[in-house]
Each structure stands twice: as structure tokens, then as C-alpha cells.
Length: 638
Image (tube, rainbow, N blue to C red; front, side, top):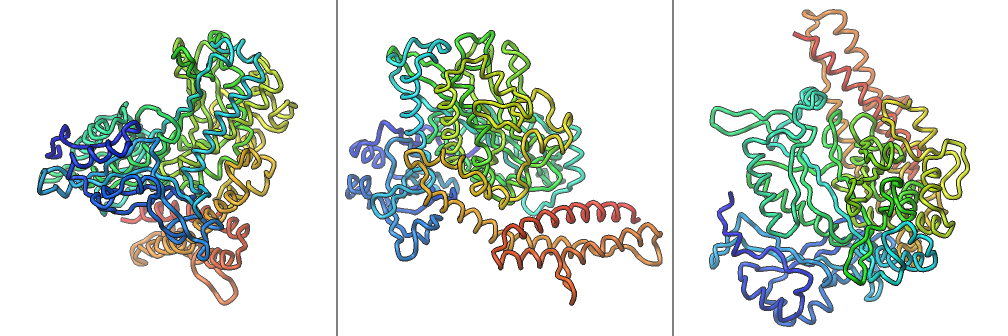
């Protein structure tokens, strides 16, 4: 374990201790806290970090809390908002959430012997002094709008209380929006290359899932759980995930060739706090594992052919009554015969009906799209599962949105969105999801629908008309989506899933009517949506040209001729000829024809994103074929 006395360390300053005097007293009592950093989240999900000496803040805490610090538009991702000639951006501390200490465990303070720390304060980005911008602000406004509008809907449609464990809207003191994420990630020893075949075999045999951790992985995981508990995150568990292979114990007594997938879970909290918690937890995980010589990646799909990492996102809505009782608004009064209340059904239908425009916030990178493929427990189809009957809750892991229920525990009723990954922007995922839920709740309550009506709606057949859901879609299935439907059936019933970042973000143009749900009360203005769209396309374009195309070229060069013409068989020559032709098609230009990779670059240079997207799909298919052929070729050689 780390050689520090946790009882003497400061891990957080709670939200109810942010008065000037309490902040001053706390910081003076912990001289090891040397710096303060204001953490703003831009439209791309990146967080700001700066080292402000504590002594400077203590000179005038009030001014610091009021004015924060100033940066400019070139420092953050806010395209079309903060321009070079209009770049003033302030980072203002948020006093309504917990503040966390970022400990440098490799740097003990000479005076106290405790690790030097930076107090990281979640903050809002303010453009031109009055316009809140960035992901945290969008989520804050989305939750505020959701609560306000839902409360009004409950008052205007009192019939809904016949199906809730509440007498009337007058009993409600406030609405409580809760969220939580599950964090999956891969760890490995540096410079180790993945053996795709071993990893794939281990996954199919389920040799790693929930198995006992050993060596440095065990120590680091246990250390992470203990430290995160000190922060007050209410840790639930840590365990091995489906991916990984057994590490090797070297003669030195050290473990090498570590390649394992892990997951850690913690309890829910309010939506903005949940996103802030996750942001800080990732830093702690990365720092602790590095102390044990292990690299951490939060990529969605770090290795092709092996399970990627997800970040299932749980969402719920409750009402805190004036008598102090908490009532889940998704749960029905009659849990033996009904799956959900009208509020719950409406929220779920809103998620499904509007997922075309939620998806661009969930999966906005090439890496994210690579994970969403059939066969790796990653959700591809826009469909839900309720369970075979109300008394037998089920967990269908092949659907996009799962209804989580526990018999006899209505507080547990919630939705699990299974498509996000560890690099999804949780602030925007939650904001988009709750605004979509509000759209569905509004439609359901204003139509006066009861749970029986709504179960029929969400279970409708393809081609059947509905008051809210699309006619030519299926929204519920209790079957195994990947095994019991053909690809053609999945595309027809659940909608054809986007295959690239461009196809995904193009939903903003294809479904303008659905995009309106985000604009309610200016939660996301047209300006903000265009800013996000440009940020996503710019990142996709830059990554393709600067990283993915060069990486593919490296793979093509590694697929070199390996057989000796004097010691080979006709199979070796034949398969190498196919490999050679495919390599040329992918990466070598001729006088008459541009290779696929060059065509991608050309299309991007010409801003022809549709053609670039089609070429990326063709390139991915060709690369999968090439890698499989080359593996077969190498296996046949002595």
C-alpha cells in the first residue's frame, strides 16, 4: 500500500462547506494542498487544469469564487462560440457540488509528509461574462429544465397519480434526478503487444470474467477502491471483466505481460455530481495503476477482435415528498401487474424515439464506433427489454436500453443505457437523455395514457401506428437481438445503425424535428448544436488524417512477405499474392489509381465527408480481411 496516513489527508471539501471562512480554515489546516485548479468542461468533454498557488487564492477568496480565472477560446473546444476575435472565456467555480483533491502520490510534502495536492473545483465556462457554455453548463440547464417542466406536467395531468405512490402534486417538495456510471478499462504492462488470438480465445471461454485478480493488478485495484472510498464515492465493487489473459510470473518474481480488463462501480448521486465524480475517478484510477507499473486505457475499443470497454449509464427520477419520503417516479404503484408508471414508460419511449439524435452525443469518435459491432456485448440496435412479465424482472444484455427492476424494491427502478463508453462525454449523454425523456413523458401524460396502453405501445409490431412511436420500427424485444434476428431484420425493425462518426452526426440534418427537443428553453441553442457538430467533425477528420491513416500504413508495412521460395508450398504463394494485392489496394498509389487511404485523405481535403465515410467503411472491411489472411498465412509457415 501507499505509505501515507489517509486519516490525515484531505480528499474533498463537501458542497455544504464552501463558505469563505470554511474554505480558508480547511486549506490552512492542510498545508500539503499547494494548488487550486478550476475544472471547466468544454463542448468536446475536455477538462481544464491550471495550478494556482493556494496563497494567491487566500488573499481574496470572495473575488476568486465570484470571478474565477480567465482563459481564451483557443484553450478550449468551443467552435463557433469562442472565436479568435471573440475569445474571452471565464472559468467560474461551482459551489453547489463537491470539490476534490488531486494527490501527487509521488511527491510528498516536506513539511507534512503527505502527498502534495491540488484542489480541483468543478467549474462553469462563461463566454463574454454572461453566456454559460460547455458541457457542465448544458447538463446543469437540462436538469433544471427537466425538473421544472416535469413538475408542471404532473400538476396539469393529475390522473398520473393513480399509478404512483403519491396522492397529488401538492405532496412533492422537489424532484430528484439521479445517475451513475460503470467504468470499464484495460490495464497492461508498458510496451506489451496484445496477442489477439489469445485474448479472443480467453474471451470466448470466459476465462477472465469475474475471476480473482493477482499480482500488481490486484494490489492496484484494491488500492484504488480504498482511496476512492476516502473520497466518499460509496464504492460498490471492482472486478475483472470479460477481456484479458493470464499474466506471466517472471524469474525475478515480478509479473509481466499483464493484459486485463477491469470494472469498478460506485453508487448513484445527482446528475451533475455523477458526471463530476466520474471525471475525477478516472484520474485516480490512472495515477494509482501507474504507481504499480501498469498503463490504463479508457478507449472504447483498444484492440480489434476483442471486447471493448463500455460505461453503462444508469438514470432515474424520484420525488422527495414534504414528509421526507422518497418515491421513484418510474416505479408503478402496482408492481405485480405493471412494469412502470406512465412517467417511466414515457421516459423510456422518449429515449428510444429520439435516440437517433442522442447517439451523436454518446458515440462521437472512431474508437467509439469501432466498439458498436454485433457479437461483443455492445448494443447496436435501438430496442429495449422489459422482462417476460412484471413479476419476473429480466436483464437482456443485447438491447440498447435496459429496464432495471428489483421485486419488492421500487427505489431500484431505473434505465441502463448500454451504449456509452469510458470516453463518452457523460455530461452531454445525460443532458441529451433527460431532454429526450422529457419529450416522451410530455407526450404520454398529455395523451392521458395508462400503463396498460403504454405497454402495448412500446410492444407494437412493425408497421403498426402509434400515438408517439414511429410506425415502421420495433421498440421492444425479449429475444437475443444478435442471435435471433438476421442483419436484414435488425436494420428493418430497429433502424440501421450508423457505421461511422459522419453517419452518426449526420442525424442532426436527417432528423431536425427530433433535434428540437434539445432546444427547449434554450438548453441547447442552434448555435451550441452547430458548435458541437463542428467539434465532432473536426476531431473525426483530424484523427483520420493524423492518426488512423498512418497507423493503417504501419500495419500494411508489417504484413510483409515471410516465406522462403525454396521452402514453401503452393498455399503460401497463393495466399501471399492475395495479401499483396490487398495491401496495394489499401495503401499503394499507381499512376492510374489512388489507393483507398489516399482517397480518404483526398475526400477529407475536399470536405466531401459522405465519400470519406464510405471509403472508411470499405477500408475497415478490407483491413479485417487482410489481417485474417495474414494470420492464416503466418500460421502455415514452419
